[in-house]
Image (cartoon, rainbow, N blue to C red):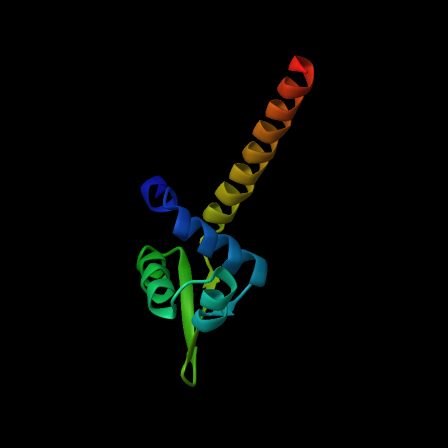
Length: 96
């Protein structure tokens, strides 16, 4: 699981899916400045691992997060990132 989530592209995709709740491949590709085929390949890998689920509506495929543990990991990662940023800013302030 951590190996899959260690990929920057997949993390960006997951964050976008979580923010949207459910999103189609083309909208996700547009929002991240990626090609739809590249997005589709990564999303399919996440779906194969049981992290995302998809549904088809006409020609569009919509993805949503189904693994709530992944949402918790994303929340924790964001929290740790914010703490690290605060610590770095505080250290720079003390040095100055």
